[in-house]
Each structure stands twice: as C-alpha cells, then as structure tokens.
Image 1: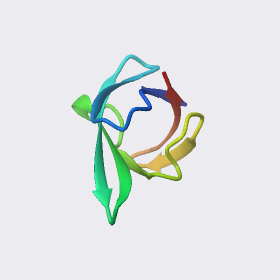
Image 2: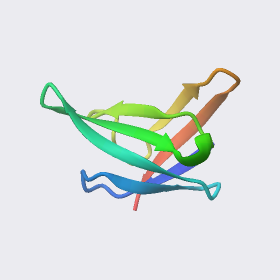
Image 3: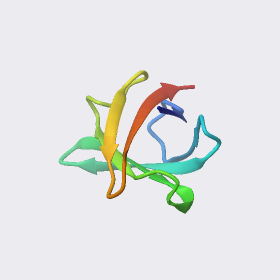
Image 4: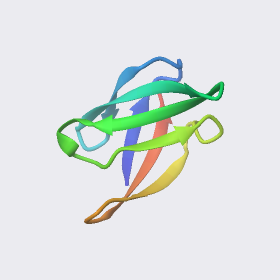
Amino acid sequence: MTTVFVHDNDKTQTVHCSDGTQGVMQITDVDSAPKYDFKFYGHAHPGFYLDADQYHSGEELKVEDVLDTEEFQLKFV
C-alpha cells in the first residue's frame, strides 16, 4: 500500500508518497462539489480522483490500472 501525504487546505499542491515518488493534486469544482484529482509524475502510479465525502485522512482505495491494481491511503500532514 502506498501512502499519499497531502495537506488538508483545499489548494492545488505537490503530494509526496511513502515510496519516494511525487505527484500533484488539483481541485476542481463539479456542480459546486469539489473533486480532488491525483496524478503522479512519470506515471509512477495510476491517477485517481476523490469526491469531497471520500477526501479524509485514512481513506483507503484500490485503483485498477491496465496492468495491475494498486492500493493507496491518504494521510493529512
């Protein structure tokens, strides 16, 4: 499982992962509800997005990619 470290401040930001990789989290409003879109540099991990009700510290998710399934956990810092 890869832990994604993120600041809980509702701003677009660089995120750091427990395996040393980095990515970016962008926030967009969809029908007045924020959407948190995660993408990782160098395609180290598959990208994913979370809705506002899923965006909290400790959230665990599985992301299916073409070749594999990866597990992530969010950790607010």
